Length: 111
Image 1: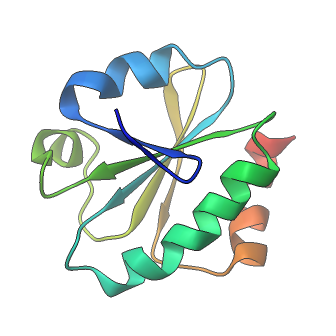
Image 2 (image 1 turned 60 degrees about the vertical axis):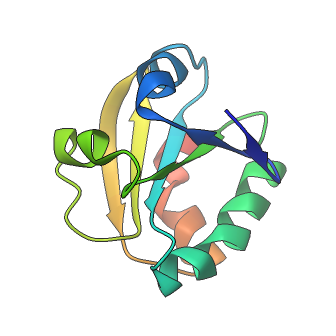
């Protein structure tokens, strides 16, 4: 795994362990290099990851490079944020959004 700001990059090989092994809720940003809204979302997620590091982990997964994860979770458009708690998918956020809206959408896992 490599780190971009405070967001770790996942691969198919590291995905399950990172999700299952996290004591905190997890957001996985499924993105692609060709996706402009994905790039718009990146600094927003980095800020949320830094500000809420004690309550939330944020990861990125390149959907083009790891299509088996996209298929497994039915990701049909990008960006899609998969939200996990205790290793289980609890929410799916599709499309870019501003920081305020993202925090509202994550309020249930941020506590």
